[in-house]
Amino acid sequence: MSRLFRVQFLRLGAALALAIGVAGEAGAADWRTASRAPAGLAPNPATTPEAVVQVYAARTIGWRGYLSVHTWVAVKPAGAGAFTVYELMGYQTRRTGNGVRASQRHADGYWYGNRPHVLADVRGPGAEPLVERIEAAVADYPYAAAYYAWPGPNSNTFIAHLLRAVPELRADLPAHAIGKDYLGANLVAPTPSGTGVQLNLFGALGVAVGWEEGVEFNVLGFNFGVNPKRVALKLPALGNVGLVEIARPRPLPLSSRSKP
Image (cartoon, rainbow, N blue to C red; front, top):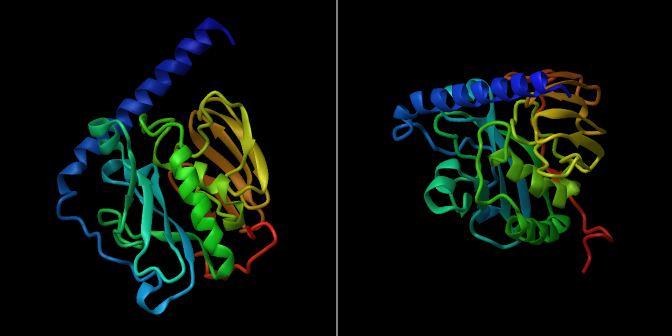
C-alpha cells in the first residue's frame, strides 16, 4: 500500500467519523423526550417461566440513525421475573471508562424513538446455558474502555463479541451495524452467527462469508453483499433490502453441547 493511498484512506476515515459524530450531536436534543416504551416484541416474564434470549437492533440516536443501528442482547433465565439487557453505551464509556451496561430496562424498548426489530429469539431448556455463556462473554469483552462510532469498537462490536460466544442464536447482524466487523489486532474470526468466517482489517476493510450472513464486503466500514438464505441485498445505511424477516421465537432443546 503506497504512502499516498494510506494518507487518503486515513483522511477519508477521519472525515467520515467526524461527520457521524457531529450529526449525532446535532440530533441529540430530543433524546430526553424520545420514547423508550416496549414495542410488544418480548414475552411477559410473569407468564413466561422458560429461559429466553433475544437479540435486537434499532436505528441509533440522531442523524447517525440514517447510517447505523444500535444492537443489544436481552436474557431471562428460567423463572426470572425480568429481563437483563446487555449493551454498550458510548457516553458511559467516555464518562466512566467502561461502556458495558447491564440493566432491566424493557427488553424490546424503543431506542430513543426508534422501533426495534428482533434478530434472534430462542427459548426453552437450551436457552438457559446460553445465558451463562453470555454473562461470561460480557465479562471477557476486551474493549469496554473504548468507543469509536466508526469503524469501532462500539456497541455493535460488543454484541458481535457476545454472539460469537453463543452461535446457537444464529443471529445475522444487519449490514448497517457499523462496528460489528471490528476485530482489533486479529485478522480472522468466525462471523457473529458462528456459521462462517470473516477477514477484516480494523473494521474498515474485509470480507465475510457465512450461512446466516451470506456474503458481505466491508469497504471503509460500510457493508455490501447478498444473503441468499433471506433473499436480500445487504447495503450500507439500508441494511437488508428485499425479504424483511422478523425472527420468530425458536424453541431450543437442551443439546449435548449445552449440558454441564
